[in-house]
Length: 311
Length: 99
Length: 90
Image 1 (cartoon, each protein chain N blue to C red):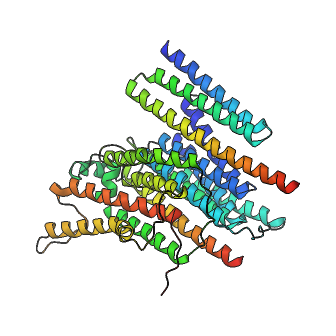
Image 2: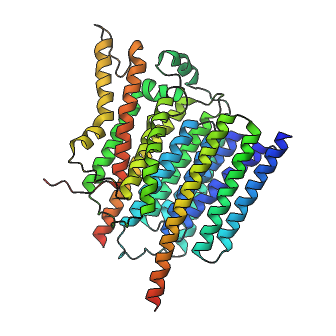
């Protein structure tokens, strides 16, 4: 039994135990904390399976920002809610049977998958990597081969933000401000900004990219806002709205530009296919705008002011 | 020889982590648990960083790992202080309402 | 049992656990966390399938990265809905 075997076995079991503990924890705050730990262990699993960008993104977005979202949701819950009662004796048994059987069917189905993929897009993608504008495959897929998916993903982020503003959930109670936390967040800010832009820059050649960088910026802004060091990021400010839209707009403008440059009469138009000499510059520009947009959007999702849109 | 030393340092780090976890489980109140977890975990991480540095022998990566250790130490300290303040306020409210 | 099979089984079990949490609740927040667990299980399946080739399949990694960000957006919106629902009930 090699070291690899023990590591994978323990990591798998740990993931399952943490998931069970999250579901069964008696206090909601404990469940949220266990979920954050689960997210970090999942980041370890991503690193083990060779997905370095995913490990970065999971630690920053999946564990960090989702944890902050969940805690802020916990803080917003009014104290007067009576805790819901769990159902009688038969319901848990039925649910358990159902989930065990579904999990078993799923596991059996997944077991049938071949150990060598029958069709993989990897060789074709690697072939076209040289002409894509970046050297890193994941960035090339995100911003060149599957740029359409990334554009729609930025749109989904924007829609989620607009949705939270429309729903107008109540504000959490004001926090008391500790001077130590304020000093720490001031020291942390330049470091986080530096690391964020470094991760963005490295996304062209090594694991990294716009999403991880945006999440780091959002972390810095959320900590500042929670400590009361950042004035309310109000939607009324023109620069807030401009930055939120920057990612989608940059994408659309780049798409239109490449449509215009690539246009040849009597040939099918290709949406979001960058012309070869401009590919690197376009990708960098889009990534920069996307980073700022993602950072601000994620910040507003966690700590934005909730003002109802009046007619 | 270096591999042996690295292994020993990693084991020491593991020992400190285990000690910290035992402390969290066994100590009676918030403050002693905080004390156990921050001190032991920071020292354990330091030993693990040393062990990894000895094992892989690239001084730039070692400096980066030391920087990570420094950041974990600082954020652990700050969090411990904030949690301790919160715990003190909680126990004070508890005692006041019990009177 | 190979690495791929082990992680696929873990993903199936994780999905089952998430499904159980979704059904049982009882708080809405716990159900949202359970949904996130199910999403994590699906991502684990995709990344494990990507790990079958050497080097790992970057196309699937990019898709999971997109999925991660969409999951966070959906969670944020769901939490806003939960907060509004609970404040209306109170």
